[in-house]
Length: 107
Image (cartoon, rainbow, N blue to C red):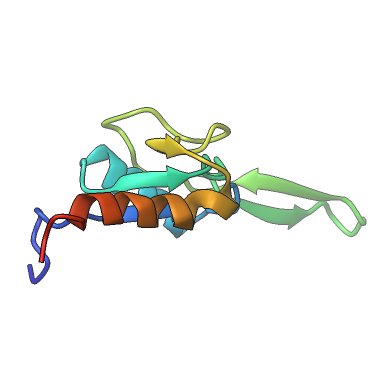
Protein backbone atom coordinates (compact mmCIF):
# COMPACT_ATOMS: atom_id res chain seq x y z
CA UNK A 1 0.00 0.00 0.00
CA UNK A 2 2.26 2.68 -1.32
CA UNK A 3 -0.16 5.49 -0.55
CA UNK A 4 -1.66 4.02 2.61
CA UNK A 5 -5.05 4.67 4.12
CA UNK A 6 -4.08 7.95 5.78
CA UNK A 7 -3.57 9.96 2.58
CA UNK A 8 -6.15 12.54 1.57
CA UNK A 9 -8.18 11.63 -1.49
CA UNK A 10 -10.81 13.74 -3.23
CA UNK A 11 -12.94 12.34 -6.05
CA UNK A 12 -14.70 14.77 -8.39
CA UNK A 13 -18.12 13.75 -9.70
CA UNK A 14 -20.84 14.99 -12.01
CA UNK A 15 -24.17 13.76 -13.34
CA UNK A 16 -22.14 12.08 -16.11
CA UNK A 17 -20.30 9.83 -13.62
CA UNK A 18 -21.71 6.37 -14.36
CA UNK A 19 -20.88 2.69 -14.65
CA UNK A 20 -17.68 1.46 -13.03
CA UNK A 21 -16.73 5.02 -12.06
CA UNK A 22 -20.01 5.41 -10.17
CA UNK A 23 -19.50 2.13 -8.33
CA UNK A 24 -15.94 3.18 -7.43
CA UNK A 25 -17.25 6.46 -5.97
CA UNK A 26 -19.87 4.53 -3.98
CA UNK A 27 -17.28 2.11 -2.56
CA UNK A 28 -14.77 4.81 -1.66
CA UNK A 29 -17.45 6.91 0.04
CA UNK A 30 -18.96 3.97 1.90
CA UNK A 31 -15.56 2.97 3.27
CA UNK A 32 -14.74 6.53 4.27
CA UNK A 33 -11.68 6.48 2.01
CA UNK A 34 -12.41 9.62 -0.04
CA UNK A 35 -14.18 12.95 0.09
CA UNK A 36 -16.62 13.31 -2.82
CA UNK A 37 -16.90 16.79 -4.36
CA UNK A 38 -19.24 17.78 -7.18
CA UNK A 39 -22.67 16.66 -8.31
CA UNK A 40 -24.62 13.50 -7.55
CA UNK A 41 -23.63 10.70 -9.93
CA UNK A 42 -25.95 9.51 -12.72
CA UNK A 43 -27.83 6.92 -10.64
CA UNK A 44 -27.40 4.14 -13.14
CA UNK A 45 -26.29 1.20 -11.04
CA UNK A 46 -28.26 -1.28 -13.14
CA UNK A 47 -26.89 -1.12 -16.69
CA UNK A 48 -29.41 -2.08 -19.32
CA UNK A 49 -29.10 -4.36 -22.32
CA UNK A 50 -31.14 -3.71 -25.47
CA UNK A 51 -33.26 -6.51 -26.91
CA UNK A 52 -35.03 -6.47 -30.27
CA UNK A 53 -38.65 -7.63 -30.24
CA UNK A 54 -38.88 -10.26 -32.99
CA UNK A 55 -38.25 -8.90 -36.45
CA UNK A 56 -39.81 -5.52 -35.64
CA UNK A 57 -38.26 -2.11 -35.14
CA UNK A 58 -39.24 -2.25 -31.46
CA UNK A 59 -36.49 -2.59 -28.85
CA UNK A 60 -36.66 -3.10 -25.09
CA UNK A 61 -34.01 -1.84 -22.73
CA UNK A 62 -33.89 -4.13 -19.69
CA UNK A 63 -31.40 -4.10 -16.77
CA UNK A 64 -29.57 -7.44 -16.75
CA UNK A 65 -26.98 -6.92 -13.99
CA UNK A 66 -26.73 -4.99 -10.76
CA UNK A 67 -23.99 -3.85 -8.44
CA UNK A 68 -23.65 -5.80 -5.21
CA UNK A 69 -24.20 -3.24 -2.50
CA UNK A 70 -25.93 -5.43 0.07
CA UNK A 71 -24.36 -3.43 2.92
CA UNK A 72 -26.11 -0.19 1.98
CA UNK A 73 -28.79 1.46 -0.13
CA UNK A 74 -28.62 1.23 -3.90
CA UNK A 75 -27.93 4.37 -5.87
CA UNK A 76 -30.15 3.41 -8.83
CA UNK A 77 -32.17 6.45 -9.83
CA UNK A 78 -30.71 8.74 -7.18
CA UNK A 79 -26.96 8.60 -7.71
CA UNK A 80 -24.23 8.81 -5.10
CA UNK A 81 -24.51 12.09 -3.22
CA UNK A 82 -21.27 14.05 -2.77
CA UNK A 83 -19.99 15.16 0.63
CA UNK A 84 -19.60 18.66 -0.80
CA UNK A 85 -22.26 19.39 -3.45
CA UNK A 86 -21.12 21.93 -6.04
CA UNK A 87 -21.66 22.28 -9.79
CA UNK A 88 -19.35 20.05 -11.83
CA UNK A 89 -17.65 23.15 -13.26
CA UNK A 90 -16.72 24.30 -9.73
CA UNK A 91 -15.62 20.91 -8.36
CA UNK A 92 -11.94 21.18 -9.32
CA UNK A 93 -11.59 24.67 -7.83
CA UNK A 94 -13.34 23.51 -4.67
CA UNK A 95 -11.03 20.49 -4.38
CA UNK A 96 -7.94 22.67 -4.87
CA UNK A 97 -9.20 24.98 -2.13
CA UNK A 98 -9.65 22.03 0.23
CA UNK A 99 -6.13 20.73 -0.47
CA UNK A 100 -4.61 24.21 -0.14
CA UNK A 101 -6.29 24.66 3.22
CA UNK A 102 -5.29 21.14 4.33
CA UNK A 103 -1.66 21.43 3.26
CA UNK A 104 -1.27 25.18 3.80
CA UNK A 105 0.78 24.88 6.99
CA UNK A 106 2.94 21.96 5.85
CA UNK A 107 6.34 22.14 4.19
